[in-house]
Amino acid sequence: MALDRRCLGGFWSENQWHQELQDPQQRLCLGSVLAGSGELVGVCSGWMIVDELQLMLVLVDPRCRQGGLATALVSELLSQARTRGCQQATLEVAATNAPALALYRKLGFTTSGKRRRYYCNGDDALLQWRDLTNF
Ligand SMILES: CC(C)(COP(=O)(O)OP(=O)(O)OC[C@H]1O[C@@H](n2cnc3c(N)ncnc32)[C@H](O)[C@@H]1OP(=O)(O)O)[C@@H](O)C(=O)NCCC(=O)NCCS
Image 1 (cartoon, rainbow, N blue to C red):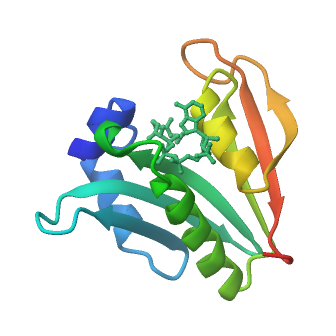
Image 2: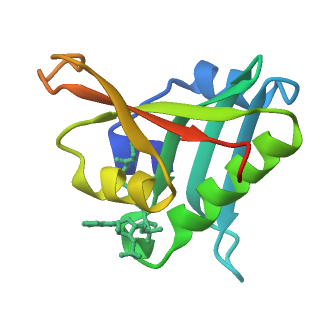
């Protein structure tokens, strides 16, 4: 939750985080810790719904960004979802979030639609899609 607060101002409540970690049949959540201290510095999570992975969030501690951590976490999440039978991955990202858009582009996502003024601050959401059958 501390990492969530630092990166996204508290995307999920404590209760939502508990739920996220208690349903391994349908939810995947991966973390990355610093060697030595064990401090959690990266998290990504997704929901598996039928044959689709819905990527819910990716967070990397500001001190550890631009070193490939998010790429490694999301790649592993997609790989595990593929192993469990998911055929596609989807997500929504704010049109103004250039680092996240670049990350998803690098990982093979393409923009499949737009939800206008989807976020509280008025930002549009861009829907991202990736085929997992070739992952
Ligand atoms: C988006 C985020 C997860 C990226 O984490 P990261 O560990 O820095 O990402 P990586 O180092 O794996 O970078 C992957 C690619 O993203 C792009 N990227 C990352 N940070 C960038 C930045 N500040 N500006 C532009 N592109 C950036 C680059 O294309 C990079 O590929 P390259 O290294 O080959 O050039 C991180 O910035 C973050 O936690 N942001 C706040 C939370 C957030 O917005 N999450 C996404 C929505 S839930």
